[in-house]
Amino acid sequence: MNGTAKTAPVLILTYGNPSRGDDALGPALYDLLETHQQKTGELAEVEVLTDFQLQIEHTVDLEQREYVLFVDASVSCAAPFEIHELQAERDDSFTTHAMSPASVLAVFKQVNHHEPPPAYLLTIRAYEFGLGRKMTEQAKANLELAFRYILAKPW
Image (cartoon, rainbow, N blue to C red; front, side, top):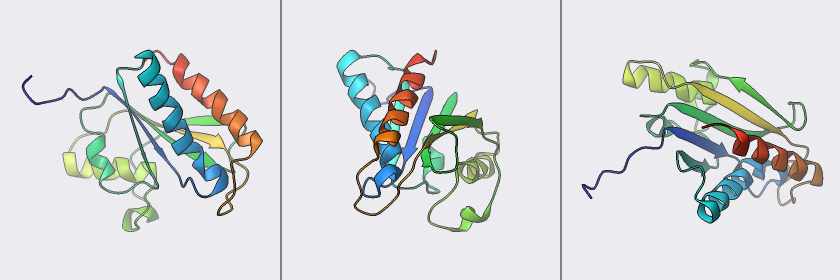
């Protein structure tokens, strides 16, 4: 081996706080995808990452990708989930510790002097974000449907 790993063309970047009820949807999807990859060997062209929140350092994770899917919980999306194409756009989150996906794309564009890869935001319908709460049954059902949707994608 020459010591350089090939970058997976697809990145799925999940985020959320596992200690805050349904905010754990992103990390829970990460766990499902990682387990699926390990057990089946499928999704070899997909790298899955997770974090509590998006930060400026995540722009590096977008390099050399053909497709990026951000995944987060949302109380304002329709059940079971929604998916929307993202555009690079600097917003108020640019100056905070937690950034929006659009702002991460804007930083990527500014730093790399070219457009970021095609990116989408998959929001999974959530209901309860209380600290120390368990994930609701409705959110678990939505998570399962989002997981199946990702497995069906022709990456």
